[in-house]
Length: 215
Image 1: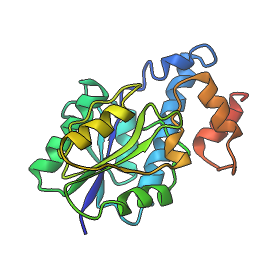
Image 2: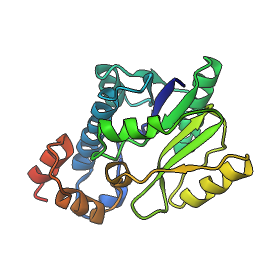
Image 3: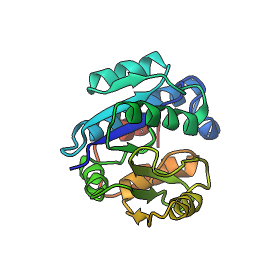
């Protein structure tokens, strides 16, 4: 079986989630970013199929959370944006001869360990490429590359279809997996409301926090 490593890029919590500033204070946004990351790390740590977890960050709070959940903290490319941080982790894994990279963001707090295992289980051979789109089918909320540099990655608000084309340009037919927990990333006030209204109700740290904030 191919050894698949989770790779989570985490920006500094200071100034996090600025697009929710109309409904959350700066302090609330920082606390929210930490809660969401912890929910994601808990899901990754509960996976039965992952070989390990990398977190790329220079934020001390994020690094402490990562260590608490058994993740390795790296900093290569951590200040180079989402794509740069993911590529930094890909370089680390490739240099160590790891089989595959599964990158997920730190803002998908409805993700479950079962969803993570479903994505990992899709990786049956190399080269291969699996992608979980965002709920709007614009973003790429989980990407599995075997080996880590099998497909060039470039993240952004409209990366899903470009990633499909990038995989096919490498001669790899992408595996598309749609999962509701991974699909719901939180960037805008409407995402906060969708998360709180989500069913079945999941007792996450993020949900408890948002309810305390009055959502």
